[in-house]
Image (cartoon, rainbow, N blue to C red):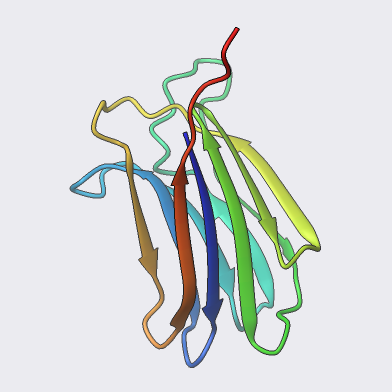
Length: 129
């Protein structure tokens, strides 16, 4: 369970963003990305390791989002199978991921030509009952 606060400048990157629930060999991951030419924020769950028979193809979803001075700020909360991302205090994405691998615990930034201006990761604990 994590809270990730990330700020990136697009620079010359075609796309950039963050992978969560990533396996060390990149077999599984949930990808939050910004497509600079389409001006869209998206989530790619094609490698999210879905083990749920209820949703066999998680796919790619995206929608319009304007950057603020070329900058994207993501607040991402990963809580077991639920992932919530808030972008530029304007858009939100909530999705599920069901990794089948026990080692799908990593995070990774991507975006050749982009710049990370801020990154903070907090490990969250469960609620006491």
